[in-house]
Length: 344
Image 1 (tube, rainbow, N blue to C red):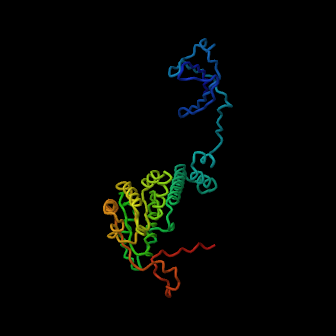
Image 2 (image 1 turned 180 degrees about the vertical axis):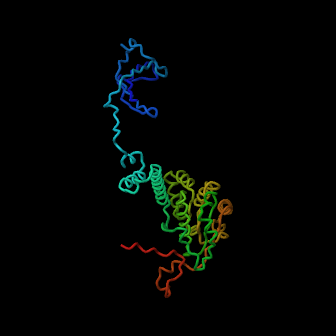
Image 3 (image 1 turned 135 degrees about the horizontal axis):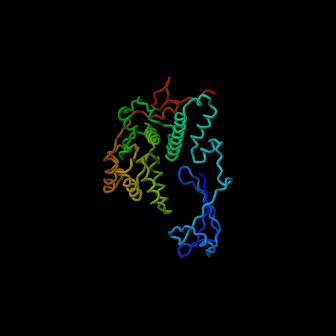
């Protein structure tokens, strides 16, 4: 049933004031009835209103009355013959469902499916679209150095001595959800950064936020943040990240300000977020590297107390970039094989 209400409002008082003309508004109330609310200009003196014996609605306003009258068919006509289109689904931000619906319209095989089956296909497509969009955003914000690294491509040969069961456990990202840490140590070129990015990629695919940053660059960013007053904002952003990857830990000595900043970053994440650290220095040398017994104890207790430790061994994997070091045949580099582009 289509009805229309024309509202005559007279408002008195200091808290609420109203102009003589109010804008027109429409809305849907209930599951079946379309109610068109039309607020028409009224004389605030109330001349003529009292003579109509209209009901008064109490509230913040001193007096408000509604006059029902038949609806104008041109005002609220509904085109019952118009069907759903792709643009109709794009309006409420359902682009995945809109694309799937347009494909269904051109696929004759889909028309034989029941309504439930077709609707299920639309919902699945929308969910997949949203998941892919979120993954793209997470990977973009993570800024991984090795964007193509993934745990499925880990090579266990070349004397790296990687434990497959441990790698599978770390790839599940449960250690991130349990707010634990991961420390990757080894000589330069053994694949620490690539492995860290692979775990970051796995975290993004499971809906976790990741930030990759080289430790020297992080200290430079924090130094600038001290100067422009954004230090607190930067710390807050790092504290909200599910996984923070600190690459190249221990390359250069730290000054007192950098040690204090490092403690602030680590302390904000204890028990609430996970941190992954890569370093050429074995963990037993970290205390001497920090060069401050008090701060070193505080930092290392927070980092290593709940940390998984993986020590990588073997020759440098970057030797493959120097042809003079390659022997005949394909070397076992430890890096995943490069995928050939699809044939044209």
